[in-house]
Length: 408
Image 1 (cartoon, rainbow, N blue to C red):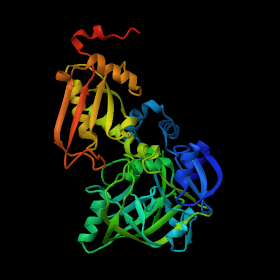
Image 2: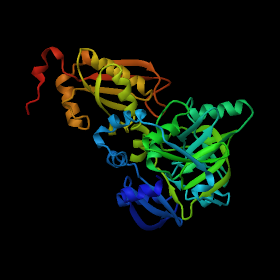
Image 3: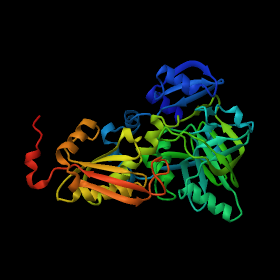
Image 4: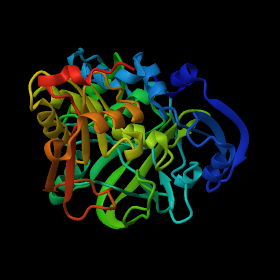
């Protein structure tokens, strides 16, 4: 399974255009294609995007119901691991000149630099790690890489620097969408490739020195150094400009690519960005809530960029189940800001149904939960050092549930 096999599965639109690297987003806006799976050319090179830009497309790769993705992904951990190790040379990549300007790295918005947005960084210290990191182009050999503390890559880089070393990494661009999903999913340290193999029903990885990589269109090998530089501004998940921070510099030592390679990119703040950031948390929330009550389904909300708010559907058996579900959901994802808990007869993908549940089953003095001073997301422009979190119990009371039966 690789990017090219994924192309056969979803049949993206192939556009007969050749754009400059800073004109792509405006062109897609004008054509109404901002969230459409497609392949076009940028300065003569093939560029693909939006292969995971909806629940329906993701569900197709998972062979699942789009409305039951959380349920299906929650089962992945129970599947057996299937990893096949091969030599790096077997991928069939050709070594390219060491010049990042030869890649069709996009400038998405007027105030930003050029960014690699679909680069999956693979590193190894005590264990392997694979995760997404945005990378700002500095010059032909260097990138500024956003590392979020205290996530795994940051901790590995910090450990290397504190020991007077550099963190050797591979950056994979253009992989199968399910490997992208696995790299976006928070799993225990060292389990990224195991999880990917379960998600993909088997995974072949290729070893070069101490690193392993999946089948990729482009691979950069280099070192995350102790040197830092200003990174940003960048348009993040909320569609607003993120802060400028000092971030580590990646020195690129080697560039490999397939013949007639396809460069993959993710539009910042677009639907694919939101799917990859938010959907992986749905099965985590599902598993956490299942520890405290009978959970039926979980969905993050499109209005919250699929990240800040979630709807949790439960089979209520005792009073208090909904409030326990709220606390469990908020504990599952530190970035989650609000949770609405509903009954089985509410469609969690319908804003009208959810509003109906709040209007007819929720009383603010009994069912509203507020938690102050909690750690939230740095992406939330309304938060300070801490944030307030909330929950709404929009479930029927058990003692007179028959009065809430929906007839029409």
